[in-house]
Each structure stands twice: as C-alpha cells, then as structure tokens.
Image (cartoon, rainbow, N blue to C red):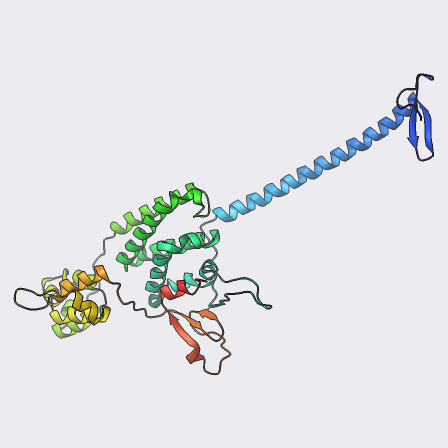
Length: 353
C-alpha cells in the first residue's frame, strides 16, 4: 500500500495515482500539474460567471419588457372575437374548460360598449360580476375588467348619458372591493393590495366626476319634447321601463310633471315588471279607495327584481356550443331553433360547472 502524502524516505517527492498505477513525482512536476488544474478550474469558474451574468442580463431585460407591457395602460389589448366555443369538459379533441374569465377576455366587449343596443347589457354584466364573480376571474380578466370599466365611464362622461346606471355600478364595485381587500390574506384577488387600493381611489374619482356632470341644454332650435301634443308625450312615457326615469322627466317642467302622475302609466309599469301575485301582496289603497300604483311600484321594486329588457344580447347555440354576439357558422339544419338569448345572469350561470 503506497503512502499517501509526502514520502518521508525521499523528501521532495509525492506518490501520484495514474492510469498505470502509483508513481513518484518531483516537486516541480507536482507544481506544474497543480498549476494546470488551477487554470482549468479558474477557466471553468470564469465561464460559469459569464454565463450567470448573461442569464441575469437576459432575465432583467425580460422583466423590463414585461413591466413595460404591464404598465402601458394607455393602449391595453382587447380581444375582438365575435364568438367563442364553450366547452365544459375534456374530450379527445379538446382539453380543459372554458371559464368565465376566459369568455370575458375573448369576447368583444370593447366594441359592445360603443353600441347603444348593447351598452346596458354590458353594464348589467359588469355589475353582476362585481357583486359575486370578481374573485373567480383570473388576473388578466380582472385587469381587462377594470380597463373596460374605464372605457365605460369615459363614454358616459363624454356622452352625458346613462349616468345613473354607471353610478350604481361603481358603488356596487366599490362596496365589493372594500370587503375583498380586507380578505387579501385569503387570496381572493390577484395582485398586490396596493394596486387594488389605487383602483379603488380611481373609482372614487370617477364617482366624483359623474356627480359633477352638468347636462347642458342642446343648442338646436328645432322641436323639443315639450312642443309635442300631450297625447304624444304620454305615448313616449309609456315606452320608458324605469320609474325613476319618469320621476326625472316629471321634474323638467310642470306640464310633464302632471303627465307623469297618470295612474294608468304606473299601472302598466307595475304589470310589466311584476306578477299578479306579487302585486296582490303589496296592495296600497288611497283614502278615496283608489290603488296607489306609483307607491306600489317603488314598494315592489324594493322587494322584487325588475324585468330585464335589452335591445341586443349575447346568444348561445345549443348545437355548436358557441357563444356569440351576432351570427356564427352553425352546422345545424335549423340554426334559429338552436339559438337562445342569454341575459347577463344566464351568461354567468353558463359557466357554473
């Protein structure tokens, strides 16, 4: 067994293990071998260090690009797909599920808010999501939700129309966020809590801007609503489906205020939104023995939901399982029989697996 280390019998020599066996080497040869191994180790360390530095630069560059895209809120990307396939299970052809957040991201809601027929539908959908579905959205969907909401508010500020529904939407969203931010430890919202606090501050600013709106009288010199005969004015009022709009209309001038007190007008409004059974439970009779239809309407409104009416809605094809705004490439023989209109609540229920 050779002696490992400096040989006491021959000072200045070492035993080194080679492929041919153990050999004695002098101090100079040993120093030469040590220097070569040291140079190799140093070169490997240098290469590793350069590799780590290059990787660090690459990661930093990617992070900067990602931060730039995330912070570039002036031009957010919106999907403009007219229809999407809704799959509720995994098959050989398709894997995974279509969630509410995915549908909200991919459908063209950006163009829908510009369409007068779809505006109220989108606002109602945003309100329902704010009430209960916001934590179920992905981080991208939550960001897209806030971007669409910002566009909705900006449209209302520019057009000075539909102010009240947007106020109610912002109030609902703010109340929901107040409760969700307190539960950030439960991971109910995606992102930093400071980001959501900043968004809540934006909501308060939007509410203040909406409160400061002053609707100016149009400068046109043509015929106005007050110039029409009383019968036509009353016929127009019968087209309104919200009693609060009638109250606001009656505050314009005394003549319109008298017309908005019409009992038949409020009676039709009650029968439009509520069932006969609901009306019988909330009967209110005046001292003269007449039914107070106006008071009954507002009392029923506090107890029961209103009937929803939209000019244009999302549709769902039961044959193709496709969700679309208008028209889609259906393969059924009778596409009209397979198409069903979806209310905002039906749209959300479609993704309750």
